[in-house]
Length: 102
Image (cartoon, rainbow, N blue to C red):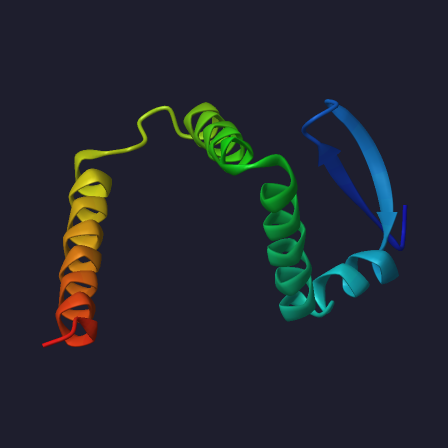
């Protein structure tokens, strides 16, 4: 069909047609505004439902990634994660020393 792009809706396993203008509108939308809205949504949700909601969301994301990439996390992913945590720990330690009374 001219003017249409066929998309697979993975969550339903069905095919749907989308016109080019809708695809174009999606591609050029204000992604910074979307990111701000997401951050606001999750901050409000976790404030309302408590820290357990953040943990639940993180677990759902982990499960999704494992479904898409069963090999994740790879040894390299784990090493990069550890390096990031060590770096953060060093920054927090440095900030703590800088802010502590002398």
